[in-house]
Image 1 (cartoon, rainbow, N blue to C red):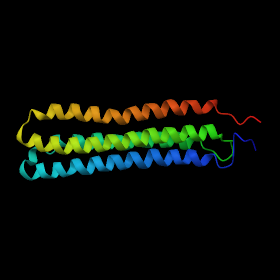
Image 2: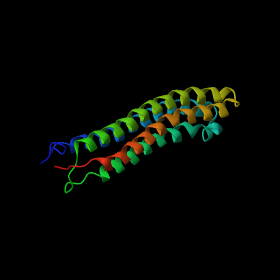
Image 3: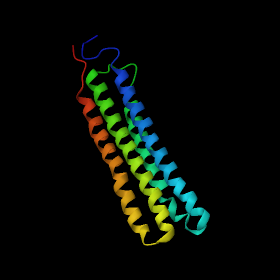
Image 4: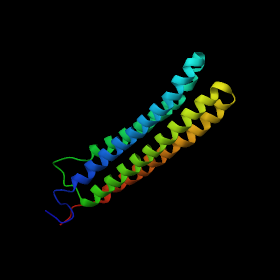
Length: 163
C-alpha cells in the first residue's frame, strides 16, 4: 500500500459526505423553523397571506438539496474495490465542508430574514418584493458553496495511488 493511499484515507471522504449533508440540513432546518414561526404568527391575523409567505421555507429547503447533491457525488466516488488517495479524501472533505458550512450560514440568514420580512409583510405589502430579493441573495451563499464543492470534486480525478 502506498503512502499516498493509506487505508484510512476514505475516512476523510466520508467526513465530507457527513459535513455536506448534516451542516446544510441543519441550516435548512433552522431557516424553516425560524421562518415558520413568522408564518404562523402571520396566519393568525391574515390567513389569506400565508401561501405567499411560504417562500422563505421553500428557499430554505433548497439549501438541503445542495448538501444532498454534494453528498451523493462524493459518496458515488467512494468504492471499496478502488484505491482511494489521501489527496482525494482531503478534497472530498473540503468539498463537504464548503457546501455544509455555506448551507448552514445561508439557512441561518434565510430564517432570520424570512421571519422578519413575513412579519413586516403583515403590515406593508410592498415588503414582499424586497423579501424575495433578500432571500435570493441569502440563498446564493449556499449556491456558492455548491459551486466550490463541484469544482473541488472535479479535482479528485488528478489523485492517483502510483507506487
